[in-house]
Image (cartoon, rainbow, N blue to C red; front, top):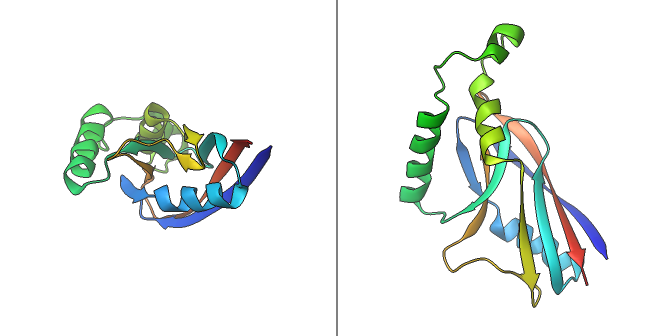
Length: 138
């Protein structure tokens, strides 16, 4: 069986982190799947989905690490071509990836004790976002 749901949210950009674990859990519950996989995918090339411990210290540490890897004020050929100033956001999203897949066991996501599913918006302006949640299993 395959079940598809959506999560819509408003994000501020500049490494705006959203805990979407409960939203994904609602889609999983709606699917009725008890054993399988849940995949969350970000539509858009400047957002990423991952799992982290959603705790203020970890969130800030992650933001600083991302800034060191793909600094906002670096030169990006994307900016030269399109003039939109968000080249850093495309690189950051590519490094963290647009999706995450989590096993489903007993109708629950098999996340660790301190692990949550998060969406990170890297763009340089606020955006409305749509995330696709697809559940596969029985």
